[in-house]
Image (cartoon, rainbow, N blue to C red; front, side, top):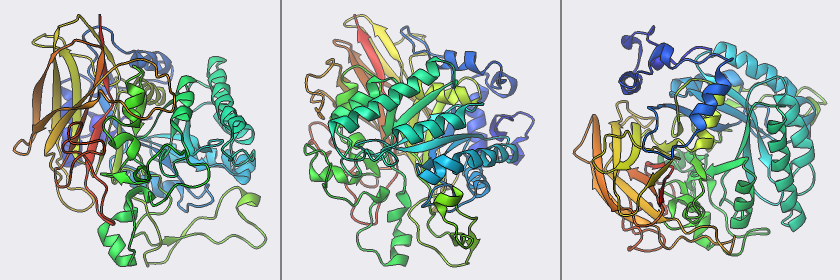
Length: 545
């Protein structure tokens, strides 16, 4: 395992693209370039434990943000088509430091595919030594949607995936229906995973809820129940399949109603009745649960407990790609083999709705060491921000007492302060330095500060509103470029609360879903076939005593 090129001082800067140089400059000042950032397998557990610690004082360590994608499919999923090598090479092209292959549950996969896939993952790691490559699973959650199951590499990861798939997958166990018994089976599955970690059978395991509002079948009480197991640490703040509404691709196909994320559904069997019809669409490409200030995500954060967001490609079939599915040998199919044959090139664009891993959607996780367990620990600690369209090269957010010399507490952390103490938010932005996949250089236009009061556990676990959460500041940064810092006064801390940050290129926004007094200039539903890039950070909590 080698460091990414941008973090390896043995690689000259002339070999890096502008974004790589930008990322190197960010960590050089933190003293984390080269050996100070490397981690051996033997020291991984200790490093991960240090990374996962949240601060109750005034300072967190300097961090390196690794770019990743936790939701990628290969030809080991029944509805995807690419070889591992194709996906890993594309991920490297678009700057990924880590990625996870999360194949769909399927009898063929559980019986044969998972083990055969592991050999391909090991091969892909050898071919891409500068990238961390996980083997996971896309779980069909009983009575609910899908979820990413991410497991640390080790001698037992394949057997864990196979047993979990056979015993706790909603599709394989015929537990897809929306019943209390099936909901409880999902909880039992998460509790089983927790037990495997406690016993040392695997070094780490975690779950993220995928595209939670696509079908409206993930009820608020289910998300809270999964969170309470300690294994489900968050959800996709924005779904994959963002290429479905790319304007040039839509024009080529002649489609009239494409939506980013393939969020084109209406309430159906099993949908939770409390969601409005608007919840089935994306806003600025983000899930309604995340994009609505004072909505479902905020209602969970207002309980004073972390629930992370991520984003990803959910890559199955890339827009404008010319490869088509491989042909099965006579008498064979996916279940008999456990995988599909390698794809073949046609030189003609094939049906698809996705971007390549890292091409559009990126999840950034803050670590102090480079390794698998460190990435997982950072996800669990909430040291996460996400962006679309490669909107910025980097963002670092810290909360500290106003005027103090403390470095500050960062994303996912907790700052303990006295009542009436003045606070300030410190945001360091590194502007985009590399044209994105559309060939233009994105520019961040505004930074929004969102604050919500911590009110404690909800009486109604199906609550999806946080009425005390709103945008409290919008900072215009249109004239700023390069790397710059913002110091944003937040006034006196009177009650325990949390703060999170949002930003966009400012090209399209409007009054937020819950009204102008809560969000005067937020993401809006896209007209069909349109979109714009946004970024979101996880929260920082403030405990007032």
